[in-house]
Image 1 (cartoon, rainbow, N blue to C red):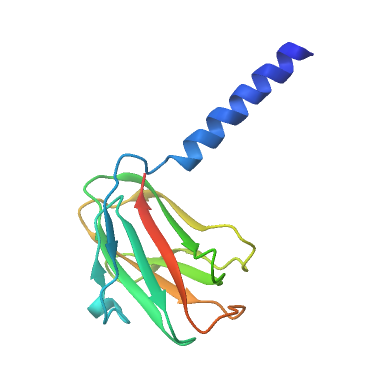
Image 2: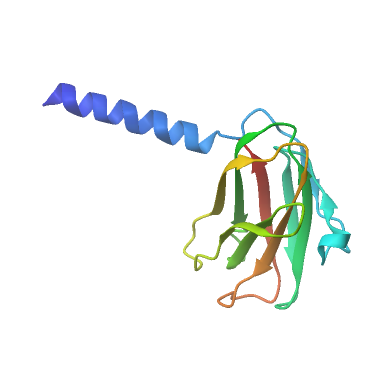
Length: 148
């Protein structure tokens, strides 16, 4: 029984470490640049960069444009400020602005995440961050990161 528990704990630790360090090694940071309230005004970001933004109004969205230099899976993660918890929704569109992924989970203290198993590399994707209906504050900050 002890051996089974040790193996189970090792596997759990490895999975936890992998999920929490999926973007480790990138390290770049940038802030959103306004105006970025439409896909035509999207802030250009690089894969792996931590992007910090803020949405002040309930009807505002922030858009980001990213081009992946590879084919294959990607993960986009969005988390809110722990100081002023918000509910944000995350939408991902392809280069034709067709929805390819979304996360609309209610605020529960966890990150929103979109996993796309096979991006078409070298074409732009658009990411929209939109404030959800359950947001408690008139403004709030968030952190966005895309990569694998």
